[in-house]
Amino acid sequence: MNTAFRSSRDVIIRTNDWAAASTFYTATLGFEAVYRSDKLIGFETGSFRLYVEKGAEHAPVFDFLVADVQAAKAALLAAGCTLVEEDAGVPRCYVRDPYGVTFNIGQADANAGAP
Image (tube, rainbow, N blue to C red; front, side, top):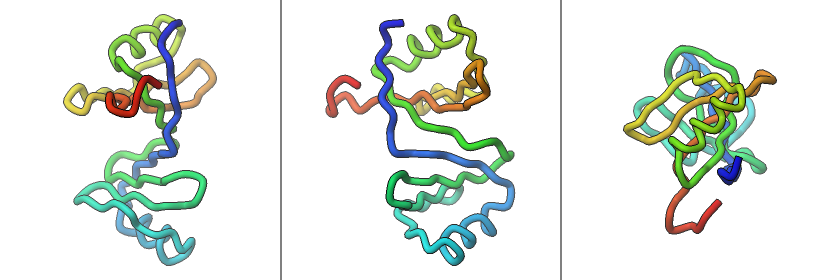
């Protein structure tokens, strides 16, 4: 596969109990909220940035950036990965690898250079 993947510092979780999770990460763990929207909050943890999203719960999702999301998705599916969720409007997709790890494939910033 000649698609280059680059990890970001982002890890994403989703929960239906978003308010309680937001309180837990600020009050209990003391993480600073560095991003907020009506359904997503991002916390600076030091080594990574944790995003908590409103919605149906799933396991943690690691974030990888690529130059071409569709080409990367096709290569991963051909290599035995499973498509979990997709949002072409962003563009991004969640993929589960053959070993059970779920990750987001997102569009790399063209101004940041190739991943």
